[in-house]
Length: 259
Image 1 (cartoon, helix red, strand yellow):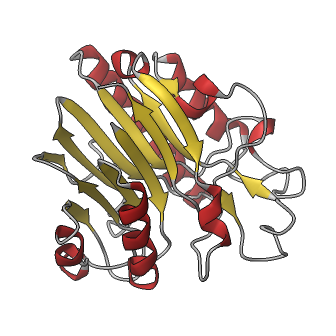
Image 2 (spheres, rainbow, N blue to C red; image 1 turned 90 degrees about the vertical axis):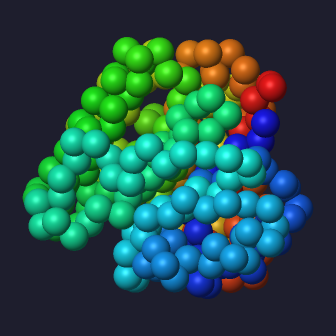
């Protein structure tokens, strides 16, 4: 089974790229973030013609998540349980489905660098709700994956030395502590399970020739529950996508599970 996650940074701008990637790689499931369109504006019919159903939570111009699935599914959540944005307008960051006897949580975690300490507190609140959700699913002995743009670099290996300031929200101690809380619940970081060390980036900024200089970040992750982690046989970012014409600043991150 092939599962991928990809922050596309606007489905309207990247629809052709996503369709081409689907035709080439044929994943069973593709989780998209930052689709930047309202739910009813997402091009479901185009993806249906390629054999994919679409579970979408969108909003105008910002955020938004969509999961493309081959086969049947049920939507279990359209918001992250327990997370309430203080302003009530930033909710299009999570969708959860049940398919193939597992739960897939598709998430776009707040960046945390805008809005000062209030903005950073929102990031931590989302993390706290995600930890609570993961704990609940583990208690229920549910197989699940929490995948998407986490906006967290877990370790020093996960970003180029010149890519971030020392106080960036992606590497602040509280951000990393939240990541470690998730991991310590018993979840497996798919990439690090197969590649324990080294630079494996999923994001390169559009500015300062970051792609050309390989000044990247690893912020797109998949965390697997124990039984699914035992089935993991492949995990890698598809970095070739960043070199395409008009690319997203993120690339697809792909895993394979034994059936």
